[in-house]
Length: 146
Image 1: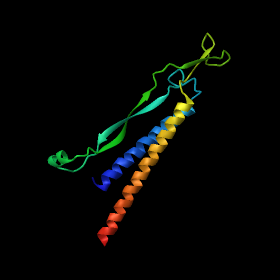
Image 2: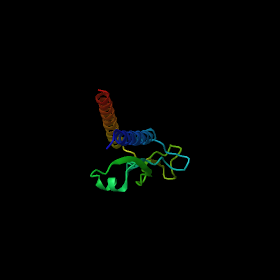
Image 3: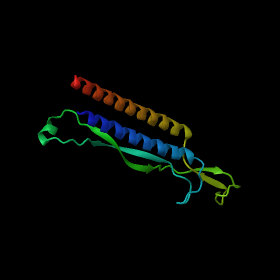
Image 4: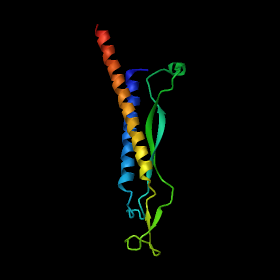
């Protein structure tokens, strides 16, 4: 494994977690959004990650000899929550239905905060790994220079 592979893997994780943090932020910001351009309340979103192989310029036999299957992370898609909206009785609300109920997004602030902490820690772990790989590469250059 080269340092460039370590950089590629860590930066893919940084990018994916930053994207996830943005989606979580959107969920939190829209926790009370009862009307969207698509109609109805905001629908909570989540990110689906995909592990994909790191491409290297190796021969077929070299790839077969590798014991480690290097993987990087990519955002596969944004999935919409399938849970129904939460109905709250508020007949004075402009988005209330004929029975006086308003449909709110099915978003749990505690769940979103746990997801945000998890994504932040994953981001920090990738940043630390990237820093360590950079430090090792720099130390290797110093050793080679003699």
